Image (cartoon, rainbow, N blue to C red):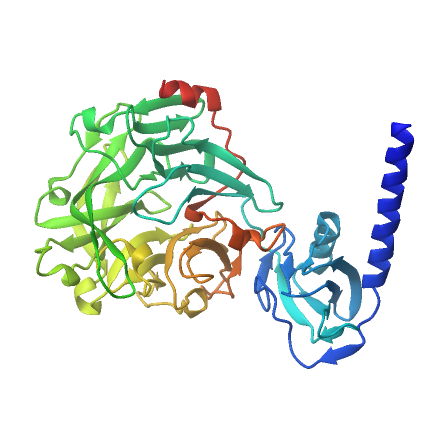
Length: 482
C-alpha cells in the first residue's frame, strides 16, 4: 500500500514537472532590444573550458529560458520555473567541449507579471578558452567583522563542480582562530596553516607528516605570520608581525589594521631552524608579505620606513623590494632592489605575487598602510618585470575593495577577493590572463544557486589554487590540539 502510494506520488510529480517544462520551453511572445539584467554578470566574460555551470538569475521572473548557440547552431535549451537558469552539469560539459576556442551565445527569455506572454532579450556572449583552470581553489570562510567570530574554517571548492568540502575547521582546534594557509607550488600534500588560541601553533602537513610547531619557541622566538613556501619545499618564509587596530569615528573606513613592528625570517622545515637577516629585523623598517619567485632565486617583500603612528600614520607606505635567495643555506644576497617605489608613487603595496613564469608581479595598491581589506580605494596593479612598465589592470578593479589574489599554475587565470557585490563581504572573482598580459572581464565564482552569493554571510579569505583535493587527516589534526 505504501509502495503504491509512493509510486503514485512520484508519477504525479513527474507529470507536473513535464507539464511545467513544456510550458516553459514555449517561445516568448515579445522581444526587448537589450541584454538581460542577469546576476551574476557573465556578459562578455572569458571562461575556462573546465568551469562549473554558470547558473544565473533574472530577478522577479516566474519562468525563464536560455538558448545556447554557437555560430548560429542551437546547442541546448534550458528552461526553469522561477528566477534561475539551472544548467544541467552534463549538458554544460558537452557545450564547453563543443565551443572551446569559440564564443557561446546565450539568449534569455523571461516570463513575469509584467510580461505574462514572455519577452526575449538580445543574446549575450561568453568566450570558452582552451586554457584550463586548476582543479580546486582553497579559502578561509569567516564573518567579515573585526570584533568577534564563531565558526571558521579553511575550505576547498572543486571548480568544475559545486562541491565544497572543509580542509580544516576550528572545531578541530577547540574553537580557536585558523588563518594564513599556504600550499607549496599548488600541492595539497604540502601545506601549512596557523592555529591561534590555547595550544596553538603552526601546523605543517608535508608528504604525510603532520606536526605542530610553536614558532615562538624556536631559536629566534619569532611568531610566523604571512607565509610562502620555497619551490623546493624545504624553506618557508614568514613575516613576524605585531598587529594593532584603530577605529574611525567618521568616514567610509570603519577600522585601520596596521603593524607596530614587523620582520622577515626563513624557516627550515628539515632542521626546525629560523634564519633571519639583520637587515630585515631592525627597528627602522617594517617588513611584511614576503613572496618567493617561482624559480626560487629571489625573495620579494613589502617594506616601509617606520613612522610615528600617532602623528604620521597616513604617510605609512610600503614599497616592494627584492633580494637574491640562496637555497643552499637559506640566506639572502647583499643587493636589495626596489621594484615598486612607495615614495615616488605615494601609494602603498601589499601581497606581491609573481606569475608562474616570473614575468609579471601582481599586487594590491592602496593609499597608505598595509591592510587593504578595509581600504575601499584598494585596487590590483601589475608590473611587467621584463620592461618595468605598469600593465593595464582596469578590467580587474571596481569602486570597492580588491585585495588578496593568486595565480593559477598555468599563469592563465587569477583569482582575487573583492567587495564589489555589496561593499561588505569579500567574494571570489576569476579573470583570464591573455598571452600579452592583458585581462578579461572577471566573473564571480559560480554557485548552483546564484543567490548563495548573497545568502551566505561569510567572507571568502585568502584564495589559493591547488591542483587536486586536499586530504588533511581530520582525526590527526584534532589530536594535535587535545
